[in-house]
Amino acid sequence: MQKLAVKGGEPVRRRPFPKWPFFDDEEVKEVLEALREGPWSAGSPKIKLFEEEFASYHHAKYGVACTSGSTALFVALKALGVGVGDEVIVPAYTFLATATAVIDTGAKPVIVDVEPSTLNISPAAAEAAITEKTKCIVPVHLAGCPADMDRVLELAEERGLRVLEDAAQAHGAEWRGRRVGSLGDLAAFSFYQSKNMTAGEGGIITSNDEELAYLARSLVNVGRDVRKGWYEHVRYGWNFRMTALQAAVLRAQLRRLSELNRRRMMSAAYLDRRLSEIDGVKPLERPEKATAHSYHLYIVRVDVGRFGFSSKEEFVKALNAEGIPCNAGYKPLQSYQFIAERSRLPASTHVAERASRDEAVWIPQYVLLAEKEDLEDVVKAFEKLRSNNSG
View 1 (tube, rainbow, N blue to C red):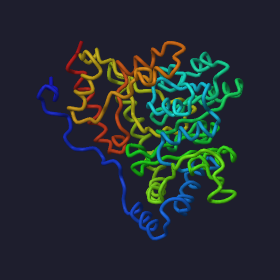
View 2 (cartoon, rainbow, N blue to C red):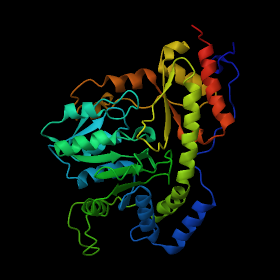
View 3 (tube, rainbow, N blue to C red):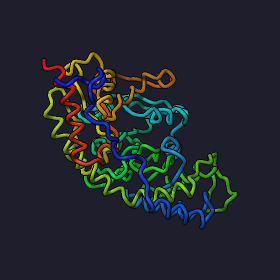
View 4 (spheres, rainbow, N blue to C red):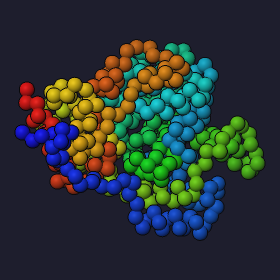
């Protein structure tokens, strides 16, 4: 039996996985063009081109670039008319910005449980949480896996609710052949440095609704009505504009997204097959209707007791020591006091709590860009940890 690296043994792997963020001469070329073209913010042709290209790629008519994914969520909620006295349904297992964006509008997040197979929002839990105050549902496409948009959209239509897709991790993902970002009333994407497309920071709102896109653009651009003129400020807004340099980088990133996502899906399928053979490991499911999964994260559910560990944190530390990048993932939204005191928790969120506390282990997307022999090191590390507890 090999000694675990965390206990002083030789690690499975010492070589690094592919570097992320990745860029090459395409980004350099785009940025140099932007510098020469100017201006670098409002009115830049690079920004307009990026908005059009990104929206079209995601089967949406309109794109509104902004400063971050968190900003995109907030602006989208404001464009949907969410405000004081409203409630917005959000999943418990998500990045805290899904809830803080709601709080920033003056509305109240209503935190509901997630599905055990995907850790995406449970439509049944969402339906049970609806009241006369409910204005919107925010399905989060966790790790790049589309939420069950058939059931979410059906529920929203039945109950007269708006739908904002939190697609921060889901660039290029598809539900029944339609890319996320085109399914709800509005969608929010992030371009933070860890994302499958990145400019270090940045975000975009997509929609097929012209009026909602117009409102979002006005809110991002200091409340201007650009149909009338530059100094026609017709509503309260913010300066949340993206720069031309970010848009330039993102145009290059978008051109390679399909190929990199294809590689991520192939690698994930290989890991699904191999890791499923190990007792105590269960990869999250990819639903049949999720015709493309962008795998911003590769998430497995681990029975750490079967590996001889007393906590998930111990397991994560041991896997990292073997040379495999991983982390313990999210805490449930209600675990943050500053969110809990401003939210409503209508029922138990035991699935999200169990995943966070005991089971979900995250491997970052750049690992999936490695070669097959590198992926085999991931399998070997899991096998090594399992072999140290043969009971």
